[in-house]
Length: 156
Image (cartoon, rainbow, N blue to C red; front, side, top):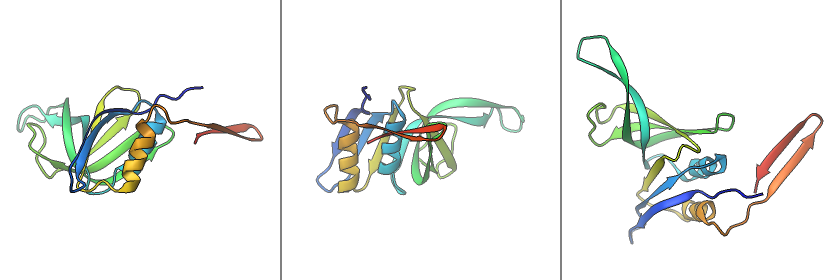
């Protein structure tokens, strides 16, 4: 049984410990690793949708696809829906969204979308988590726990 590892598209680290990565999350394990890597104060960039007014005062709105960057306040990993919700304040200018406004980005696995994570300091835990998550040669063990009428699968 093979688990495809998180795809690491780009990484860049400075001598002062700051830097960024760009990855794609293909499965729930990738989202779990991102959940453990991303902390408050990081900047996460990803594709998202937001409802915006068509014209000022018209009352009509539309959903617009965009790429946003958020300074992270909080993350939430939903194990049932296999989504990672990253919430925070918008950084950088955007035609549709004002800088400093609150937004949440829902990252779903298997959509092939890239996610960038920028940190002022990449600590040893984040770096080792990234290495394990993206190293195609690392091994994954599947555990299965049976309890009465249910079974729980875990990747170790």
